[in-house]
Amino acid sequence: MAGNHRIPACPSHYLRDEKMREIKFRAWDKDQKLMLDNVQAKQGYLFRDFLNNQRFELMQYTGLKDWWEDDLLKSPDGRVGKIRYEERAAQYVVDCKDTIMGYFALSVAFGWQKIGNIHEKPDLIQTVGSSGKKR
Image (cartoon, rainbow, N blue to C red; front, side):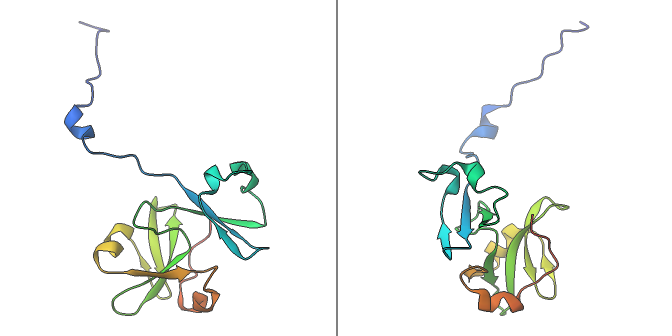
């Protein structure tokens, strides 16, 4: 029967126990030297107040652990890297000084630990990569 095609519904077993990824942002207030959490829902602010504002550096939640863009991670063998979003690969990566670690989720499995972020621990910046662009 032409023209009577139906798109099958997504079977419910595909949706079972699935949660949508949380979309959260935090912002580094450069003037106050203070981290503001959950700025997408901050009382007294509109989210747009943080966008394209030179005072704030926005960071997005990665969806893993309590890890955010610009967080610093340390591997079991001592490498230090910064979490950043790689647009060409459409994924978060750990940018180390000598290499970029893809498959960000694998960093969790291989024992990487959060040691801070580039804003609150600027002394660690020279140990991390600089090959990535901030979005």
